[in-house]
Amino acid sequence: MQVHVSIHDVSPAWADEVELALEYAAAASVKPALLVVPNFHGAWPLLEHPKFCARLRELQASGHEIYLHGFFHKSRPEAEARVLESGAASGRPSRLGWLFAQKIVSGGEAEYRDVSRAEAEGRLNDGERVLREAGLTIDGFVAPAWAMPPWLLPMLAERGYRFTEDHLRVYDPARAKTRASVVLNYASRSPARLLSTVAYCRIAKYARAVLPARVAIHPADMRFDLLRREVQSLLSWSRGHVAARGEDLLA
Image (cartoon, rainbow, N blue to C red; front, side):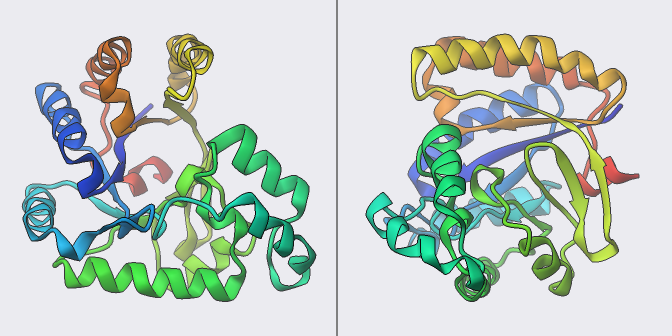
């Protein structure tokens, strides 16, 4: 089965780490998709970094896909999320869903878990505008932390998106197609998470015998010797099976 490789959280905030991940990928003849955050954590507006934008244009011209990856990436503070729990009718998440996505899974990075439909529309509009003004073509959308409310897929379909993904599946929203896949990524927020995700990836990669696989590299991975070695190993393992585009996993 095919493997799709991506680099998440692409932002001037992580410029050095992204370049190192690209170096590792190039050594394995892989051109990963780049998941670009328009204003990472509200502190790194993409358009204020023209050299980084030029680098992204260069990478896209050489064959890398560009995906819109939320807008801020970071979620709201918990205090504000408490206020939002009563807004389920307008598309906001339940308190329990918010706690699971933000505290257990993502460490407060699941941006789309605590926005309403109207807010999501606004952030999509703003994100698409930023990437267009940066001179980029948008090849897909991936929600931060893969956290997608159920109403997000139809919204992406209306906009003509041909690729998105969550923890378990890849989707072509525009054509209403989906396929199960296995995602391989690391978490470095604590030593326990780091070691457990390394163990998971070493085992789960064999699911590629029956399912497409996704290798998701995060810039923070580049700060740990062990994870750098594991990423290089996964990229070598992917060689010869890499899908050029995310859409190819649905073929």
